[in-house]
Image (cartoon, rainbow over all chains, first blue to last red):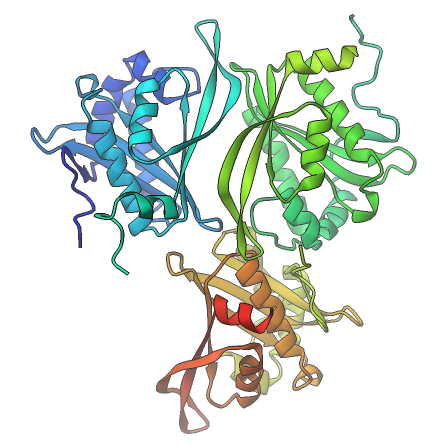
Length: 191
Length: 192
Length: 185
C-alpha cells in the first residue's frame, strides 16, 4: 500500500504546539497570507493565546470528525504549512482548509502536492463520498491548484467578501469520490 | 423613504416574538417527532427531542445570542391565538462583510401552504436589510425541498452554487443548493 | 419522504430521562427482563440515580449515538428503550440495543416492528451500511424476532455468559443495507 503521508515535495507530520506556535506567530504578521486564507478580519494574537488555542485543540483526543496535518518539505525538512479537515459523518462529506505560511514556497507546486495528499487520504483512508472547499475569487493561484487536484467549481456566492473597499465572491468547489476514482488509476484503491 | 412606522415584527397573520420558555418547548418537541418536517428543516439527522431537551437548547441559544452577537432568532406566532407556528433565524452573521444565513420553518404540516412562510420570509428580509443593514443573505436548501426552493425564488433569491451530491438521505445522494439575495436586489423588488 | 419514526404498532419518541428513569425502576424489578437484557450483573438503582446518568447522556447530542423511547401507537404507552451507537464510521456500522420492559408486549410482534423502524432510520437517515447486534443464546424469542427483521447470524462468542450455573454463547447478528433494501422494496 502507498505511503499516504509522503508526496513528491512534502511529507505530512504532527508538530507540537510549541513548534506550531512559533510559526503561526510569524505567519500572522503577513497580512496577505491571512487575507488569502480567512474571511474574518485579519488580527494579531499573542503567542500565549496562539499556544492556548493549539493546546486546547490537542486536548480533545482523536475524533472521527477532525483531522489535522502539519507539512514539512522533503528537501529541507522545513515546516511550511498545514491542512485540516472536518468530516460530516452522516453525509460522508469532508471539508478542507489548507495554507502555506512560508511565502517562498508559494507558486512552486507545494500546495498542489499537499492537496493531492489530502485528497488521497480523505478518499482512501476516511472513505468519504465528497471533499469540499471554499476560496476567495481573488486567490487564482489556489483555484488553479485545486483544479489540478480534481476539484470542480460548483458556484460562487456573490459579493460576500468586502476588503479594501471592494466586494469579491467566494468560490465553492467539490470533488466526488467517483470522480477521483476515475481520475488517477495509480491512486485508485485496489478492489 | 424613511419608514420607521411600518412594524418590523407584526405581519398580517403572523408576528415575530421571543422564545416562551414555558410554552414553546412542548410544541417544538412535537415538531422534532415529525420526521417529514425535520428532514425539510435540517440537514443533520432527524431525532425526536423531549421538551426538557428543547428547553436546554433555548438556554444555549440565548447565551449564544448574547455572547457571540452574530445571531438573531425569532419565534413565528399566529396573531389570532398567539400559537407558536414556526421559527426564523439569521445566523453566522459576518458584520464586516455584511452577510448572514437565514433559516425558516413552519412546524406543523397543517400550518403550511397558508402563506405564513411567505409573510415570515418577507419580514425577515426587511429586518435583515433595513434594520441590520446586511449586504446579502444566503440560504442553503436540499434539492428535494421544492417548497423552500419555490419560496426563495419567489423573493428573487438566485441559485449561486450547486454542491453536488452533498447530502445523503432516503438511500440516495442529493444536491445542496446555495441561494443568495443581495440587498440591492431586495430594494428593487420592494419598490415595485 | 417516509415517516421514519412510525411503524405499524409502535413509534420512536424522545428519550425523556425523568419518565424513563421511573420506568426503568419498574422494569428492572423483573429479573427475567434484567437477565435477557444485561450480560453482566446489574444492581437495582433508584429512579433518581437512573435519571442522573440518563440526563448526562441525553445532554450529549453526537452523530454517533441515538436513544429513543418506544411507545405504542394505540395507547401511546411507554414500552421500552432503543439505542443505536455507531462503532465504525468508515465501515458505517452501528450497534443496536433494544429492550421492551413491559412483559405483556413480548411475543406479539412489537420487537420486530421496533426493529423494522430502527433499520429504516439507520439506513435512510444515518446512512449506515450495516447494523450489528448481539443477543444471548438463552433469548430465542429475541433471536427469532431479529431473524424476522432480516438479521443474519454472523457468529457466536462461545460460552461467554454465565447464568444459572451454565455457560451460554453470545450470538452476533448483522444486516447489510442492501439486504434490508431488498426486503423492503
